[in-house]
Length: 202
Image (cartoon, rainbow, N blue to C red; front, top):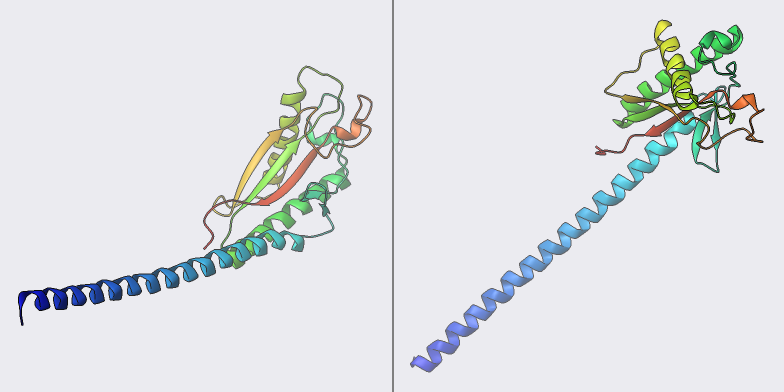
């Protein structure tokens, strides 16, 4: 075989090898992309399942607000003006609040066990729109009063399953009772929100 023939034979072998390598890489890329798409779709379905799980919480104490896409406490609560004392709330309503806390605890325990997920429990205090100088602090103190009331009565949340956030929105925030004016003492209350916690979906 002369040098020219040897060159072309070697060249053809090289091109065949490169073609084979490219073909293998292409197939591997397609397979990996398909697996990634399936994994992403599974994660999305898992997120939706976790979000929808909240609908199983006890409807005695919680209702779904379609406008804000949240399950919220539906127990009527009212503090005295400029007060964050939980004793302001009548005994029957306090018992309902205690049972609501137990229902939240039970739901979170069961949901975390089933979905291996975590939740945010947001206790949001509010104040009436009366321009009281301590409304921001007062609304936070109202939320804190509920958490402390739960603790005194044996309702504790597992920190590995649920992150509790105590907050106060003062005269602002959403889901306020209308008309949102100074005389509406129904906004001297707190809201409870339960949300899936962002993070790794396993």
